[in-house]
Image 1 (tube, rainbow, N blue to C red):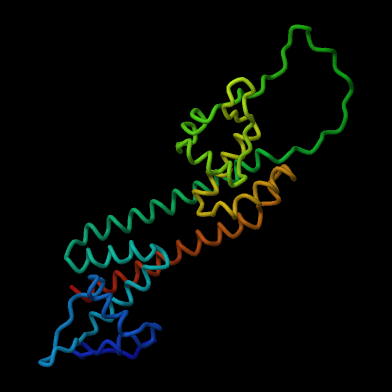
Image 2 (spheres, rainbow, N blue to C red):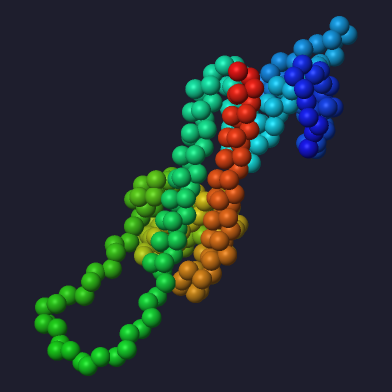
Length: 254
């Protein structure tokens, strides 16, 4: 990393860029975007930075892995404008989104476990026949595109897009031609919705759902779920690292 900087030391853009694999133009761009506080200028118009700018750059670069470039930039702009409460709100929103993503992952795992067939039990002695009026458990009613979209909180156009990508396979009503989603199609739509919320692209989801259709269980997605867990854990740790650097910058700024 960069050398130790003393308070009052004057730095050039190249001094900030060193150790971060950045160009001097990137440093200037960060200043213009408000990610770094405004630089002083020499008599000849050249930018000069200080250890405070170096701390701001470290904070921003540490925030990016956990919060993303856009949010990290907004956090730094708020801090540099003296709007600390706005910066803290943005940090809180990222943590809330991470928590929601963890809940989504658990929901996906729960949905997939529901697809895993239970092991057959050992045969038992035959039981007395059920009364003639005992009705079997009714299968879920098929859904049309509008009610299913409303149930998932998405637009009907999204379901049509997923159908085109092979994620769902509704049948057509012979009389009306409307799409009808049976139990299996609803299951696929629910899995597609959860995986999209987890950040997966349509071209990544299609083969996963196809494997679920074929295998009928959790095993085909174990690798993807393990990777998803890893990415969420990495984001959580990155947020901790970003918070530490942001706190150091706030303390230095005073």
